[in-house]
Each structure stands twice: as structure tokens, then as C-alpha cells.
Image (cartoon, rainbow, N blue to C red; front, side, top):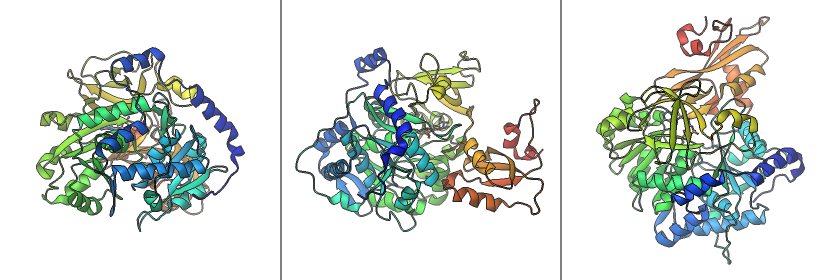
Length: 550
Ligand code: OOB
């Protein structure tokens, strides 16, 4: 492992705040935790326990496939233990946060379990993140290190180590994991994990929101409950083969049922370097893939690429992260010959699935129902009053795997949770008398670009830093494929001699180290923004392109 920089002290204040928050963090009130244990939801299992149990039961079955490399469960266990020793030698300790910046490679699950074995906390960055996001994530989580890939993942892939090196704040080291780690011999002595099942296992990042991403602390107990239930709901067993096509670090890919669900039941995960049909379809045929998770724009791309030919081995396609249109949903069974499963989830907790044996109308017209009978779902009006069944309203939720607070963010927590511990999802839904949910809109100021979450505020602040920009408003506008695309309306400075150009603003953002998926799809220069009756910028009108410039 390469040590790039070694001065911890610059991070002290953030570090102390996060350390203190983690040390004093009570994920759930004691009586609630006791109830979840009594109900058999929380079974005292850590990530390491989950892996150990799988290794014991499924030892020589294939666990992870990446290109020509196959790790069976014993091989996975060896690689995890070897990497854990190396990370320990490098100073990673129980409770340390380590930003995981890895694409879909075998090293990804190895690193997750290696950190768990040390009791260290992965912080899940996305491979699309760039210097700016990495720096922000590392600072927010007061990370000790960024763990990234020390080999080229793919000819066309990003220079992860370079990005991490440039993005790492002073004092945050860049540690590299590479293929050689997968072949390292297991250490002589068997390390015991110091992690406690009721402790925080990792930090996920909330989708882009006002004020930047928030840290989502999930415990082993709560998360693995959702993982085990998800695996059962999705019918996974040791004969399942899961293609990991979405970013491995996303909560959907990790846990719904995802990589962890697959490992829990002895299934095989096939790491897919990119989700496009030309890369994914050959892997499906070669490995007999039975299940895959996609976001709606990818499903559309897959449907359009099959020309009626069936992906024979595929039994289920899960689709989530953004609203799937009914018209597209209806194409899945006739055109791909497999069962669609809609997944409406959030890194904060609650996950809803249509069930595999639901009738076709339910599958194509709803976003499913919660994992657990103990998931509480409340639909309320603007004054937090419950609305009648079937009426759209704000979705609030509480339950055995939904967080009660973000980490170290008291101000946000006061508005993101009700006094009695319900999480305000920011989603507008209706729930039918069977408990099935339909997502009908969103109340939070967030753009959902085909499942990737973008905060308009972040882009507005960045663009305001450009010399031609007098004012800017960023909104999501409806898009047939993406669901929403990103539109930036810019009022240029008056005294400009030359008209500003959109391409320059895009380059300006890219140069600031922003993930590509956040770059505006359209930038339009306007004289003024449409306003509401009280003179505020009307984002609602900007979302309907015809009225945007007025
Ligand atoms: C998943 O997690 P996040 O944290 O990236 O985003 C959560 C938000 C939800 O609050 C909702 O606004 C939106 O993404 N969303 C959907 C949806 N699934 C997620 N909106 C409409 N229809 C759907 N099916 O995106 C996530 C986490 C676990 C499993 C699946 C998705």
C-alpha cells in the first residue's frame, strides 16, 4: 500500500466531531432495539459473521467472478484476511473511516469485508465521483484514508489512483488495492473482528441534497436484517448468479439484495465493468446470470438492444433508483422473457419490492411494498396530517432498518425526522389498501437523473463562480429516457462583449473535478427567470421548458 501523505492534524476539528458522534451514537432507542431483537429481526450478526457462515457452508462454490478471475468462498475469505492484515499494517484501526473508491471489480467486496474484519467503516464513494466529491466525502467523514484501485480496471476506465491522489485532503492517505491482493496467502493467525453487531458498520452518502451529502450510519444488525429478508423476497439461493451492473458501492447494488444478499445465500456475483448491453449481455450468456439490478434508462437500453432475442438464463430484472414508466415496465416480460421486480428504496433504509409472484398489473403499476411487516409507512399532507388511503402525500417511514438520524448533523436531523423518529423521505406517494406504494412525485429539491441524485444547489454554487454568470437556476426537466435531465438557466453578466458559450460552462464544471453525471444536459442563457406570484424564482415553471425563459 502506498502512503501518499501523512499529516493527520489538519483534519482535527472535523475528525473530533465525527469521532465524538460515532462514540456517542445510539442508532436506535434501547426499547426499540430490544423489540427488533425480540421479533427476531436483529440477530447479532456482523458483516464478518455473514462471510464466515457463507465460507463454512459454500466453501468451494464460486463467490465472485471478475473477468477471467474466479474467487470461490474460500478464496474470497483468504483475500479478505490478507487485505485486512495489510490495511492493519498500514495503520487502519477499529472505527476508522476509509473512503472506498472502487469500480465493479473483485477487489470491491474483498475491501468491504476486509474493512469490516478490522472494525473499520467503509464510506461508499461512487466510481463516477471526481476530485471534488472525494475531497468533500473524505472531509465530511473525517476519513483516515481513501482506498482505491492500484491497477487499470479497464482500458477505457478512469485513473482512480490519480483522482484519489488529487482529491485526498491533506492528511488523508491514498491506499491501493490491486489484483495481487486477491492472490495473497491467508495470514497465519485468524483475526477476530472487533465489530459489534449494534455498532455502525459503514457510512453511506445521501443522494445530493441541499447542503451537500449527509452521512448515513447503518448498523450491522439493521442492515443485515434488510439484506437477509431481501435475499428471501428475491428468491436468491446458492444457484443464483447475480450480475453487478450498477455501481457496487450503491446501496441498491450492495443490499437489495445485492452483493451482500448474494454472499449470504452462497450465490455467485459477476462483476460487470459497465452496464451497457455490449458488455453485459456476453457476461450474462457466459456465466448463466439469473438476476440483475438496473436503473430505468438502462432497462430501456437493454430492451432496445435485444431485438426480441432472449437473455435465456435471466429470471428476474430488478429496476429501481428512479420511477419506471408503466409503458416500459410492460415490455419486460414479453420482450425479455423474465420477471420484472420494481424496487423503491433509499440508502436511509426503507426498501419496497414488488413480489416475484405478484400479478402483472401490480408489477407494472406499483413500486412494491415494504420488506418488513414492521416497516411503518405514513402518508401525510403538508401539515403532517395523515391523508386517506390512496391519496397522494409525503412519505414518512420508521422501522427495523431505517435510520433515526444522520451522523453529526443536528440541524439537518431536526428537519429530516419527526419528533417520534419517522424519516421524511421527500417522496410523494400514494399507498393502496394492500400497502403497495406508487411514487407520484418528489418534494425535496433534488434532481433524479436516471437514478443518479444531483443537488441543484451544488451546481448553482459552482456555476456562480464563473465570471460570465450573473445568476443561475438549475432544475430537472422531464426526459423520456432519463426521467429527468439537468437544465441550467443562466443570466449572463450584462457588460459582456461576447455572448457566453454553454460548452465553456460545462468545461468549467468538469475542471472543478465534478462527476460527469452532474454536468447539465442543457445550458440556456436567459434575460430573466420566471417568477412566482411573490417574486421568487419559479423552478416549477422552469421545469416546463416552454415557460422557462419567461
Ligand atoms: C436508491 O437509493 P438512493 O438513496 O440513491 O435514493 C433514494 C431516492 C428515493 O427517496 C426516491 O426519491 C428515489 O431515490 N427512488 C425512486 C425509486 N427508487 C428510488 N423513485 C421512484 N421509483 C423508484 N423505484 O435509489 C435505492 C436504494 C435501495 C434500493 C433501490 C434504490
